[in-house]
Figure 1 (spheres, rainbow, N blue to C red):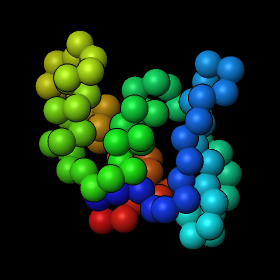
Figure 2: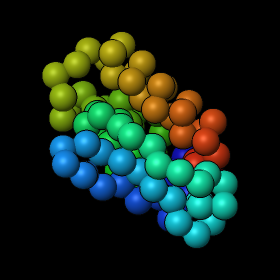
Figure 3: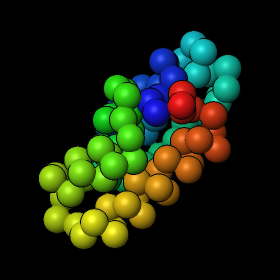
Length: 88
């Protein structure tokens, strides 16, 4: 899975946001506010990923258990999927 083209992630005053342009903007017109962990995962989703690869990346960059990493990945993926922002 990966993000649709046109999903941009930026840090604004210490907060992370994702906005959509082009094709992605036709599916979701708005802004998504995220914490640093979600922003990290969304950035990784600019390229093809699996839940396992995202979980591994999260564990390599943050001190979290496998269960916590999996739960975080699932939460972010579910939200992006519900917004229609993932290609699968």
